[in-house]
Image (tube, rainbow, N blue to C red; front, side, top):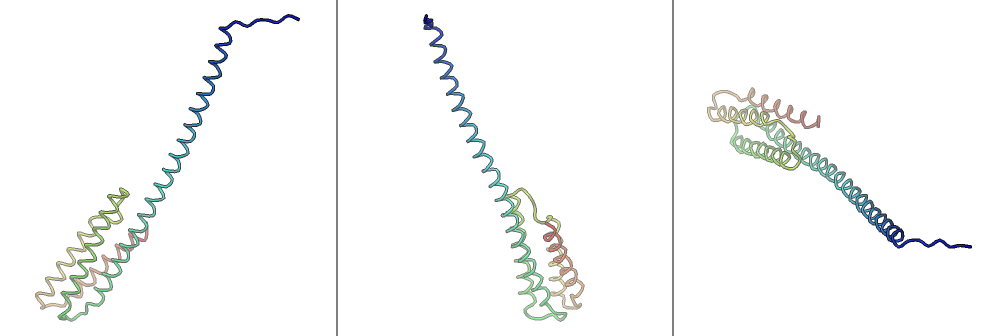
Length: 159
């Protein structure tokens, strides 16, 4: 039997090949782990944005319901607590605007259009002017305010 001698050059290249395979295997493993971590992060971020949007939407709906309750308590007759009720309605509308701005900051999406708040504030101004004049009943302004609050709730329900 004859043994063939291998040259040192071939042996060195075989060791280099094994080293390259190990390095390639380690790089692939690191890339696979990084991809898994990135996928989990993206899924969590999307879930977070959905939860934030839902939570803010629920709070805005609750605030619009509270504002509607205050408007419904306003009677057809001007009473001494009417301006206090209007102030609470104004607070609820301001709170809803802040929630809308917060939603834009956190998720990039509006919960309600800015025009809705402009219209609601305009309705409040009209209602307040009618209360100060106290020559006419503010029933039309009250029903308009309720209609716009209901429209806002409809927009929130559609999301």
